[in-house]
Length: 171
Image (tube, rainbow, N blue to C red; front, top):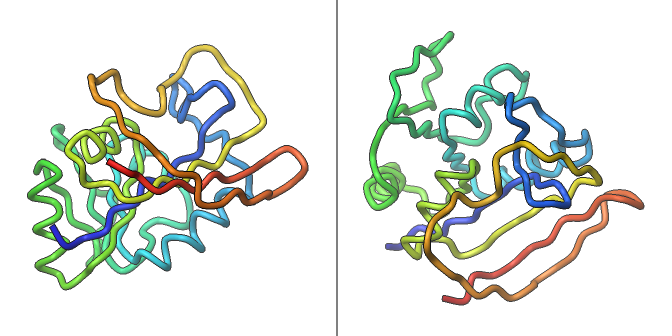
């Protein structure tokens, strides 16, 4: 595959990407960094739960192309010309991205990111570590049997309590 895939997620100190109710916990600085980073990738691939959160904000859709991946039927509240809804697997999603002429994409959402990572399609991971801990929630990577080694490329400090870790996926 010739598409570079990056995973980008906001994460609590204890590895949660969302509360049980999917309410957003990310800071304004972290959201701003996400929007700045997506401009570099131009393609935003998200799962249904991430879409449900993002679509309530004023920043969705982002980038030039937005792909919502869901096995469940969803009804878009608006018609966006740069939004595709699909139930395809990571390999077929990459084919869609290639067919639209893009060479990079950013993936967000726990189960979706896990499926791309497990298949070996992820090149980089961005984790915005938020200064919060909560017990019940959605873990960063779904409970799957896989292992990936990473190389830390950069640490960016947003505030005295908040950082972004940028990793390269080695295998």
